[in-house]
Amino acid sequence: MNEARRRQLEILRRWTPEERLRRGMELTALCLSARDARLRRQHPGLSEAELRQVRVREILALDSAEAR
Image 1 (spheres, rainbow, N blue to C red):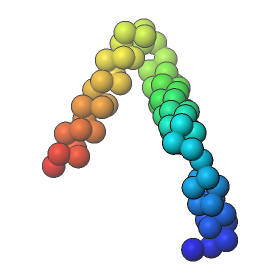
Image 2 (image 1 turned 120 degrees about the vertical axis):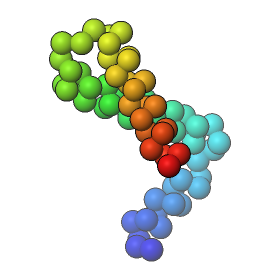
Image 3 (image 1 turned 60 degrees about the horizontal axis):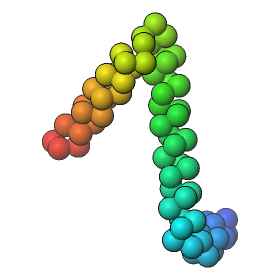
């Protein structure tokens, strides 16, 4: 393990459970925002309802792929 990784783990271990949860939620929101931006670029003419359907299809496709 390199020094940067060791230092990162030191910092993470000092976080309270609340801080870990908050950071996890922030990371989740960032990922969802990036996914939504990608979908809007890929499907610029879709309404929000249509984009929601695309999101659901992606999630279901991932779930079925993981089940294999």
